[in-house]
Length: 302
Image (tube, rainbow, N blue to C red; front, side):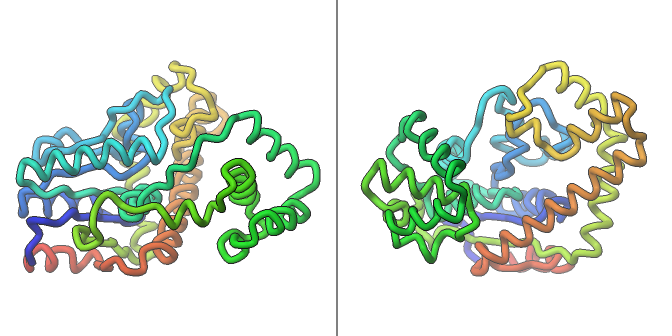
């Protein structure tokens, strides 16, 4: 398999072993790893977000891990810009970029492009949100269909967020949101991507998740959250919603004990892993599925 001109993408649910696989692959093909996980970009939560260890970082060059201040918003668009620059930088060194992570939206943006809609004033957007709230979603969706009939097969009648977005885009830009998306393209050619999906059996994945959470607590997740809370970062920031922050916060306040923390984080992580798998089913049908037991076989064939 000739991988010299490829950009390798590795996706999988949390705790599926995709990061270890990426390191082994990078060693074999002279690759460098780029983070594609929305929580691992933040500097302040290393243990809780399962960022690569110091030992991992020594083995292979890693990019876009723990570089972002948690107090500053970091969008998919922000990630895409730095990811594209990093990919090109690695390719210029005659090495192979390997993107690994569990944020499906990042991969979608990279492979399909990210729509760049004209900026809409905040006051204008606020008026549309107020309209939706005042008349309710059912009537609002009917108004949206009259304004932009093309969205009927793209947005569900119950999807408030996307309905509001489609309404404001059409009203302000005079162009359907579906048209904006049609004109969006990736910065790279389709044939450049090698897309791999680590497909882990549900039962085994749950066992791995439980073990990971216990290990995180042993590795200092509680102390990490204590330090994080001292920063007084807004609850609305993405990083504040990282799985484990609120649960460990309750432990620190003695609202729950350690066993309850493990159980609550485990439940949330399993739910998150399920959403990741669901995303893959809907958006990654063309990706090559690899079962964990076949990862080493895949490496040998390269």
